[in-house]
Length: 247
Image (cartoon, rainbow, N blue to C red; front, side):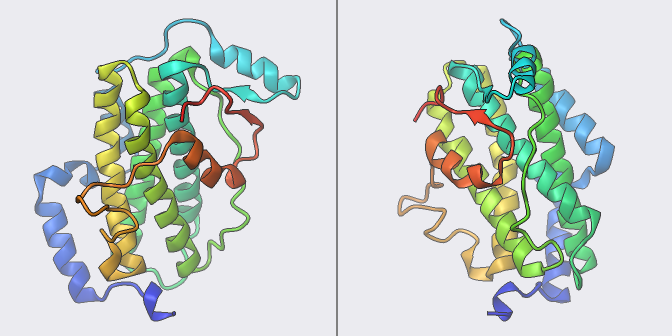
């Protein structure tokens, strides 16, 4: 069991680093910190601005002050807020991981987890900016079940969140009516899939694209919003009303 969660050796890491940094397709992974957040969020926001209509953000602030569950909106806005919720969860998780890395982490994996954190923050900020006054507020999460000092625990939950994120985007796409929103989501889910592949390889080298995440037709698994909500609800402390969510 211990070997299952072992960190790849130096040779594998050096080869992976060379290939990773040499590929222009992975340009985003070379951006870290504020650069990644600014560059990614700015480029995506140029193509998508979801924040039109009633002020859902203000309405939800009022609901929270009254002890009521926050609303996700309806239609495309509900689906986009659902994605924003998941990005908030991931950004918070990786921020906690990077704040105090587990013992024994290699320099290579420290760099990768830091990059993933920066990507997830960029995704979160993209939805926050693009949704504007139709965004849900900042959500409070409970990660008490995660042992952040344990390599096995961090990798297990990170893999779960990334697999969930990919399946969530794949399953939510059909509910979006505006094709511009699909374009924005497509740019994000491809990055999430890269994260998932890396983390699955950390967990078990032969599992990066196994039958848990790729079907017999070579397609990523897709899950509906309601299926995903059941997975992430145990981590959500803020009261939320998912009754308008499709699927």
